[in-house]
Length: 330
Image (cartoon, helix red, strand yellow):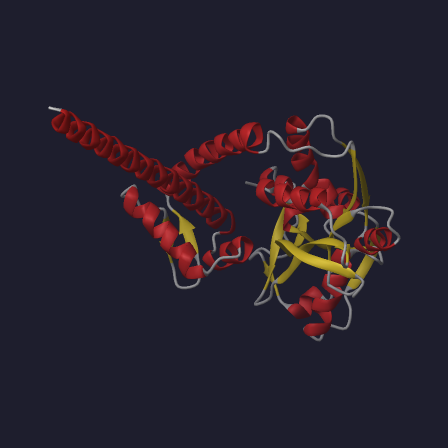
């Protein structure tokens, strides 16, 4: 009788342990599937933003085949064609545009959950000092800081907005902890880490009909009246590098202004032209204030960088950089 009871007890324990293992495996499987789906939706959103597998791969630091595979998996799972593949480009289908609406809603919920629970126990100093180049300070960083302060309301910020050259000097003088700048890597005393890729485009007033086909060649680019940024601007550095690489001696500069906002306000009242960050004109394109003129067979791209002193270590800066990456336009 005792042997039978012992056998039943051992058998029961074995079955219980087996059930625990099975449920644990199911939990891990569901967690992995959940995370993979979140990643695929995120990839879809970035591809939809750029309408390019290549640019999405560059922004997300993963291979182009991995991007293509993720999109193909989504199309198979939902039995829907999300993009039309052409030889040198892709287009979003009607179903793809509808799918993007749901993806934005789902990723917004994920973001809120992460903010509420993921770093609930993180603590930060009362004040964070950092600098941001003009384009970033006007069009990208404020939204991220606003989200951050919902989660960490005790943390205050002193954010200095200036051109890239001045921000780098402030970092070297230890007046700020780190910066986010545009332009090129130039100083060995500073450490540069890629943040996001940006494109500089030729823009003009939406009512300017000088180029009805919406494109311009390099020869005409050199003749049109241009509005440019001041010396020290990261945007100006990249444009000058582009001119040099394409054997363009100089542009026909009519006016020099010290901010992108000033240039945009000028263009609202003029048929002149400017080379500006695509990040700076999104609202203007949507509101039919400005339009892009394509430069035939050429594109101007640049990186935004996290910048700090070489050898400078800070857990606060490291986490904050990670937070900005995760919350940029996602």
